[in-house]
Length: 204
Image (cartoon, rainbow, N blue to C red):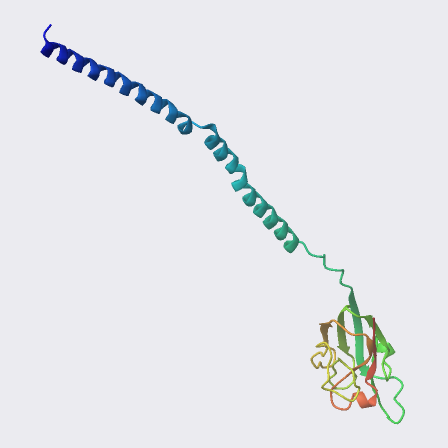
């Protein structure tokens, strides 16, 4: 074999060995890179994050429900006591001292006195007062509760009725909210001065 052929063979053999060596290096590099791509810790971290993100949502729902229940649940209203009083206005059988004739109040036409009977209720009572006019003459009467017997305009608790004629009746409903001793009167003309008044007591 001449020297030219031998040289070519040596060169080819060198290329073959170099190619084989390069193939082994690529395989090693690929195998070394595979573990990070399929590492288990990345999967574990994703799974653990799910419960943490759900916890705040569950807590917020529970708080809202509790607040709504507290807001809509309140103390039950206490019982209301209703008091009905039937009062009659007219001429007193026994005139007030100093008067030939006296106007007054009574719990019936036969019991009209001057002044009228004492009336007693409790704070918070729902009072319905019905007044009937049984005066023998054409005189109007009404009813109102006041703190000062001389203050005809100082009506308390919207207790004033309209003025009624003979044979008529009228009603008013009111609720006393403060204990004390008051007066009920007829505010028409000088009827109060002739005895058309009485004590109105509110007990606490």
